[in-house]
Image (cartoon, rainbow over all chains, first blue to last red; front, side):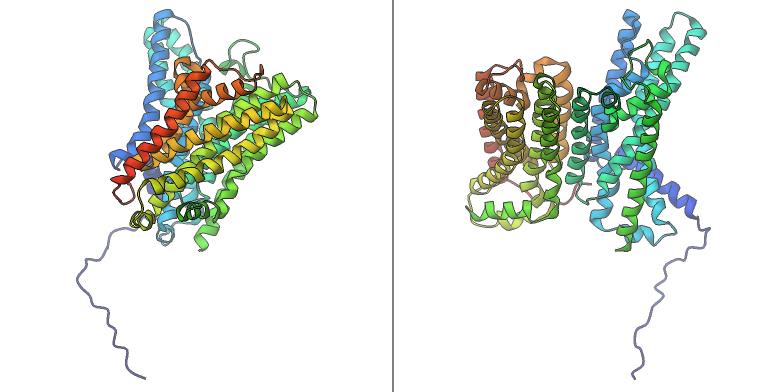
Length: 293
Length: 236
């Protein structure tokens, strides 16, 4: 048997002798990177066009609402109604952001590099999910803050008015968080199924848009129970149902202005929790399979 | 059937992912059958099903996925080089691809719309929807095919048109409806089969002229863009 002839030469690269950061730091770095990716920060100008287009539109709408309110003194939209009115833009934003977060990694086959670090598979998926949810919350919460500031500085009641306004804002932010979690869970799951960004974006929009008319049809069927449960059929109306049940007076001032869900409020909350849990579980399952390749 | 259209059709149907297109029409038919069997008044269920789901969601989304897929997918993969280096005039590449895209979208959308239209009102409404949605599929396909040559992110730009222009602005600002393919389709269907189920503010002659203009104009644009097409790497 001949002697092995291969040699590993020491070509003089400097060794790393510093501290090795663990799992938490990998997770944190991935989360921050994901959040920057969503808004196109640290990337070319082309990657910034679509996210900032959406951010720009929602901010302009919020500024417009604030201006109208300060001039006429009439509340055109409450904080919760603002989130509802922006639902199409949120869908578009998810269709832009989710494929950027997961489809690119799938397509370019870099996942083995990620998983060769001290990073469990589940952490990768959860970090991406968390960054998408945070981005959506910022997207909806930022304009609400603009509306709040506008209202706080123009309120005629001084500090007391500002305090009341703050009490209106907080449930609005909570509600925006609910939107963010539900949409991020569904959007990221759909996007993780394909490595093609184009198909991922189309799939996300198809899932969200297809469900809305179903609600419209179910709510005219000749059965009261079906009508009141109809809002379960679509993610955006599902969120509205939970919001109106949990934060009734805070979100929809005045009786009968909220979505018609009857006494099924708890059902909506349970279904929302189950939906988010199921989507997250499927996402983790998906990454078990992808990582095994 | 030219080789280009054969390759395009195989590119669309050769993968399992074209099955992703089926749930959309299936939901449309299911809802129509459900409403019909429960005896709901067509005046109530037809607008959300036919317009809200069929013409506002299924038609544009299917046309978007197919229309950007026929050429955009090849550009993404880089395999478009193989077609571009053949001694073919550019229109012989664009037209077959447009024909396949429009044909596939038209069949996918028109069949469920025909069923829903018959269930809602009459065979005439079904046929009206078939003709109108086929013309709409042609206009959408031409638009999205041209988009996939103008920009590297055709799907997102197409979504901006479908979601923000037609969806959001079309609901709040009625002036933008004149430039919305969805409204032209509604106008055409309403002209062929006059019912009180479909309503739009766009007049029929405007719809006819603009549909033809968009279909031809964007096809010419696509042929022109493909003439001076340069292959670039993936956008960052």
